[in-house]
Length: 266
Length: 269
Ligand SMILES: Nc1ncnc2c1ncn2[C@@H]1O[C@H](COP(=O)(O)OP(=O)(O)O)[C@@H](O)[C@H]1O
Ligand SMILES: [Mg+2]
Image (cartoon, rainbow over all chains, first blue to last red; front, side, top):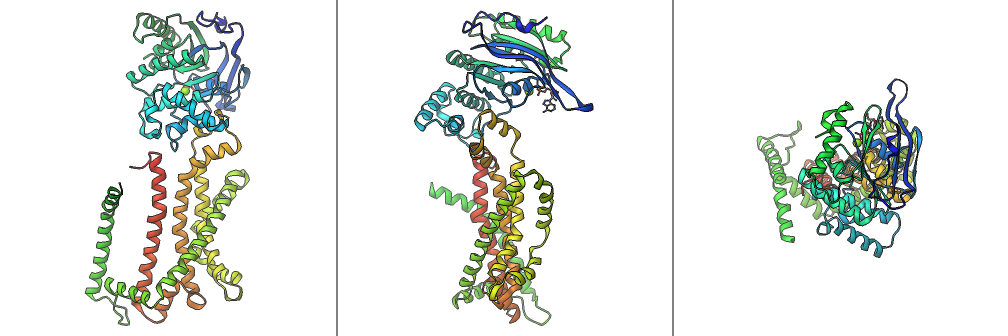
């Protein structure tokens, strides 16, 4: 049974026939000899352009590994990954702002690297800073920001890379519930405004249901796709709405059945 | 703004002033007790030493000697900085060098650089010129700190920084300029700070040993005092050497390091 080839959600109409990201039998093995560890096993998944896919799983089931393979930071042991358009932008699990740069400089960095001229850089940076609501903090340094602001800044910087595909590795895991809720709203809005294709990794079931067009559940040792749900709840979604809770408990039940650690279900 | 800054500096200075006060107090106490050399020369007190410094300045000895020594220190330090940076970069960039040279550097650093003085004088003092020999001793004393600073600075860059650079597609000069240099800067500056202490020590050892034979400087004043049994002169030299060592650290390296760390949120504002 290949659940990865389940029909795409109705929300996505853009070039629905042509996959934007294709993972085919992706396997990743770490170490050798006695310490072999299969982090991912035959992960097959297609994503279309503009789709928001949430990868859900307990810690240790290979989510970060999967993202770093898609990001091109590491190579799969076997299988192929194809991305229709260039290099993806990444928002890492740890806050990855450069501490010696101001918020503005951090956001500008990808554009400096890609040699955009100053006028265009400024324009884009201002637009992104107001999009994530950090205009008033442009000249602050990362250590002067709250956790939520840091992640907003990291999001703006990822968007500054002007890549169609955005990879997010548990970006809100370390935030308090209230801040996380705001960021969910913002991310949902920004995704709708920008039309990016997003792969969002999380261990939080409700977060996955709230944000994703599809939720891909993974089980550990080896990391595999257990099941995929199409989420057809209308946006914007409320975290504690009846529909979100309903699907979340269905997924949680499946998670428990899979023998995954219960701390993943929060 | 200026005013509050001044106040902050004064506020930060009082523990230091207290420490100096205690030190001077103990010193004065020893004088009062009547400490002297076996030969009966009395220990000069803080006041005597200060007066001797004034006298040495007045007769035009101390300041030119200080200038001469500072010039040697600056040139020697700059050379050590260059050599140390190049060696550090080579070790970081060339894997074969790392294992061998890394431990050699640690060894060199623990070798008191004063041992190089006789050899340096023998090989490098052309026509009675001892400057080159002194530079050599300073370089040998200070460059290992710089090179090891480069190494540890590079090694302590978090792997995440490299991944971030790669995910942004930063390569070549961009990679070094935007990521490596800035990330490594605090470690490098820590190495620079340590290297200053080493180069100052090395220079004083070299000046003292090479002595007044062919040169002027703070070391030769000390040597001169020894030869003439002029104890206040010796104390004046020691106090000047101490003041310079502390002042360079406090006015140049410490603010540099503090500024860097503060901007990164790693030190109190
Ligand atoms: N570089 C690596 N070397 C060896 N094992 C690794 C490496 N990266 C990840 N792993 C292992 O692969 C498994 C999946 O890790 P990861 O992808 O970080 O999981 P998740 O992000 O879902 O928590 C873990 O058991 C982890 O120990
Ligand atoms: Mg992870």
